[in-house]
Image (cartoon, rainbow, N blue to C red):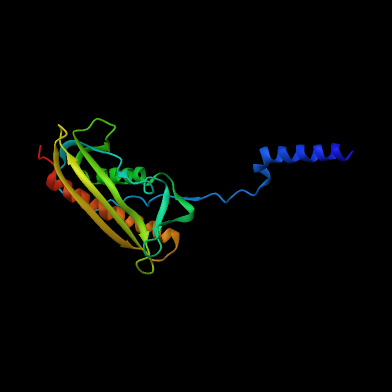
Length: 201
């Protein structure tokens, strides 16, 4: 009888081990954030150029290529906020924001992903996209290296944009808003740079 009971106990234990995920408490799902809607910015910088601009998804390192919201809490420590995520990977989210922001400025006849037909192409690398506790509340550090290619893939110009935006508080929604404000400033500076360096016709 003892051997039979032991077999039953071992069998039940094996079953729970195989399907036991359901009996353990599940971790709380992450709260997903998107960037605030892109700012319409100022009036159009120049007459609309007769080109289709294709914006490639920015290249990025391992951590910035994910949907984690990266934070530098102190010194050389790199971390991510717990329980929160971007709604998509940061480079994809930034690409969509830049496309929307530049469409609103009517600088080009068309602005879209570089997967669509295009005349000019914007390549970039996202070097920084994190909040940093350099002070309290934290600031957002955004750096994007950009290169504009012509119709024959010839490099026309390259530059680096470095932006820092202070959050109004350390609360996550306020930090997310600071990311949005930094991205709006990036779009404004990028539009001015493109207006200067894109071909006239």
